[in-house]
Image 1: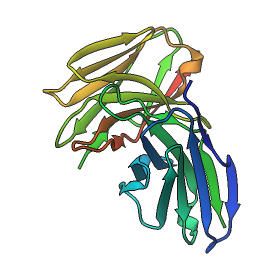
Image 2 (image 1 turned 135 degrees about the vertical axis):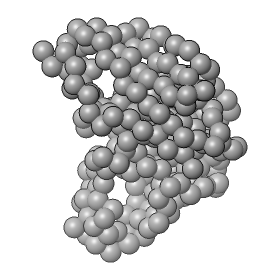
Image 3 (image 1 turned 90 degrees about the vertical axis):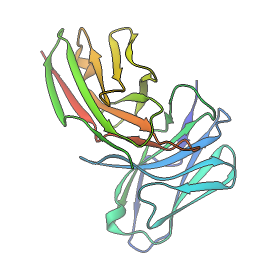
Length: 114
Length: 111
């Protein structure tokens, strides 16, 4: 089974702090994604990566950056956390190539910024 | 860009059949996926339609009509554990694997 793990299930940070959310997948997937999920808004893509050191902006990249130094690890960075970044953050991975559009999600990190 | 529309909430009775619709607008099309998410849990993949027609996986079926930019998820013999949110998703055109999700349909199964 594909396993996607995230570094924390719950996190509380203060406004202005630098926050690191880490995601690791164990299936050698080329593609990795970071989403945030808010009530009534569904899943919104922040950034994705299709290869090591490669990244692309999603729909809401402002206030975030990412890092992918190794294939299995994709990090989301909040440079200076703000209260409007309080949300559920979900990481996902997907193999490259064609085929079913199956993304495998981690359990999520619920971030509260005070 | 891509946009998908789903009903926000649906209620159905245990043992019944329910259909969750999804209409999409996309500049290119690579298929429609469906995901299930229980409260507090991660989304899990349910099904994928690349071509028109019905795909069946146990109690769940998914249908696609590319000419109508429309699909649906059909859940049969509803069980209480089917209470969850259901998301449709389309992959964006172009060479990348970016996916756009709908806002989700919260299904409540009642006894």
